[in-house]
Length: 306
Image (cartoon, rainbow, N blue to C red; front, side, top):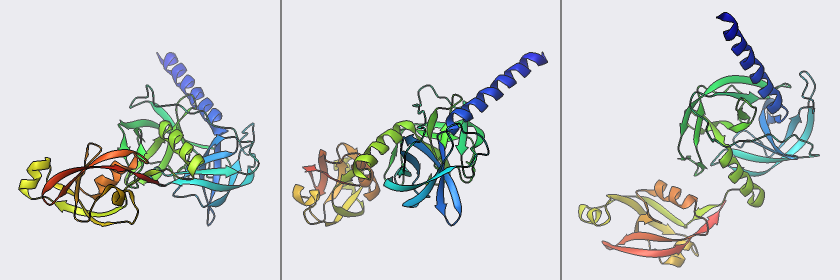
């Protein structure tokens, strides 16, 4: 009985080592400043993604040799951040000279809780690996800085120091997502591939991710019982000020209005308003407000801001 088990273990051992060898060519070192280093992922021939929180505007990127032999020194290149999205903790860097080996990325697909995965990092010269399991798979989640993760992906334990910005890979060496330690308090999540594709496209085109903009300052508002019954909720966002020329001003929103719905999404406070605006840059939406105790519906064309 021992021999089959030994064979399975040996096959798994070889498969994981092969996954690291495959993905490791695309795992680069990022100089963080003050002598610290971290990790990035080669996205294209001259582009790298990494953790926005940790990455300075101008830095050095250490690229492994094409063969990726352990112990070989890194080819250190100048790099510059060309776009950031704090909402997903993604920074996009352009690397002088190109010649990187882009990683292979995969969507979540049939990934399941309990599947094996590897977190990879290159805080030193050689690639490092940390074996883990997929601990949590969840639906779309909003982040505190207004970003959206298309899926919530978390492995079963904290990623090691220096691994932030590096890949979480499957048993074939394909990247499931980019590891981050700072995006959601108390969670070391992987920004999934679907999110990375969307965010990188925005960063390449605009230097940031455009989000919907209304142009109001708001406070939480508790609604009287009679009014709450009218709109089906007891809270809203009270408009305290309106920026000159902003979409809110053009649409006829007034100071003192209480916003209770945007594009069919209930608004219960300023935070829910901010999140409802996030995915709608440039859209024309219906906004429901309370004005003088009466419900009004306004049409507003949102602006966009990175």
